[in-house]
Image (cartoon, rainbow, N blue to C red; front, side, top):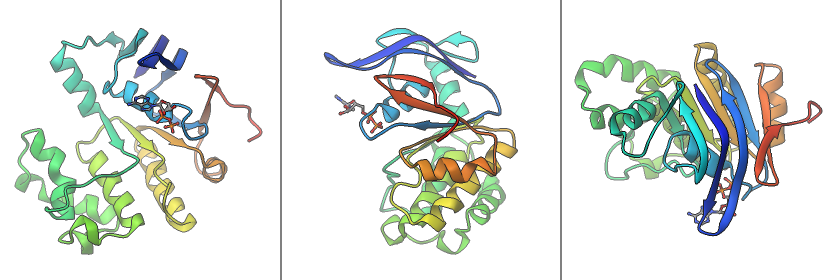
Length: 225
Ligand code: ADP
């Protein structure tokens, strides 16, 4: 689905990632591990083309997408749902409206999809928080709302950036369960995390491949985490 060939990225004069040669295939489940500052967020931003590689190639469904190719970039963005690390919401609209926002931005009729939205809220157990405002949510509720918002357009690939960063362990497992369920529904999932316990907890639930960022590049991690 997304393929990196000799791709590299630098911010200004600083090389962050180089020699990226990897492929995220349909239906796969990956963890991307590495300490804070290693380049995990940068890699995710390359995947959904918020950043373009400074050299090499990133392909989406076999096609290199140029910066000027707006339709292709829009297709890619529709196919990829992102759970951002900071899970920012618009604080002046409700949780339900925030989750439905990608529908609106894509010009889809939110009323017509009210049933889909209700099932999605049910799935993340936020039905009773639909009319709350984001500042009223707990950390775990925010993360679940962020997962719901990331999948409302039914993407094929979900990228989650430290989705369990600021929540307790039980809630982290709940978020992991949601992401595993999405994978069972056929979606590709990539979770960037520095939490090896999360990776270990996933092993009994899903066949996950683990990638590690080290020395500015990404390689399969050793099996004995
Ligand atoms: P991680 O997600 O693993 O914590 P990041 O991808 O956020 O890592 O950051 C990788 C490196 O790139 C860090 O050294 C960070 O300081 C640097 N960096 C991130 N964003 C920018 C930016 N917009 N401008 C310059 N340097 C950046």
